[in-house]
Image (cartoon, rainbow, N blue to C red; front, top):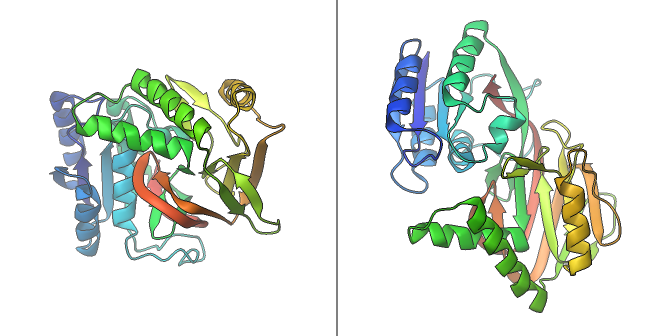
Length: 316
């Protein structure tokens, strides 16, 4: 089987020696090419070129950002109009395998992939031997795919601020995320954003202050603790909306209590939830930050999020 291994050399949970071990293990069973990413967008470009050249499997070694780029490279020519084959993904399209190498690894954990890179590599090889895979549904925000979560407002501003810190050489640690979240919260309390959210079968939801669109549960982790906004969300059930009507301290405190407990099921005054919807549209008068899978994509005033069932085949 022809395969491409995309390696993020800055992945937080692997070492150069460990990456060499994983590469040799995969190369023992696959006709393997290896590419180390050198800049933002490199993984997507290399994946798209490899898929066009007939590669059968793409293995992503890195965090959720690397996985997101690889997925977008694999599906670069795919429209968000539903599956191309009766069972979902194009049967001729290459499959994805993931070796977790980041700090959160949300997509991999949602699929039950071992967090240890060596164990994950062994699981991939065993799955290939059994020809075991599954189809997963993805989300699409305008022209960009996401695997587990998108957001506009507060969380996207946090992602943007942390990315700026990383660009200046500072570590993207949990402490930095927490401090940045507090700073962005205080800024938005002074001038809260206003969004209008539309979902099929319901009237427009006005004056929304923050909105998440999830493709699975949980949508992120805080120092190992799962964050659950829509506990029923799965890769095959459409998108899930979680929104806040105000950013007052009582609402935020109550919401944090609900989403951080093991069996969290957030609800109540100020919270808007919709599960298993085919699409979500978010509009605002002023440009707001947009993030997909923890990657800041700039500011937008109008974004449509679409669920695409069975979009991708993953080796598990």
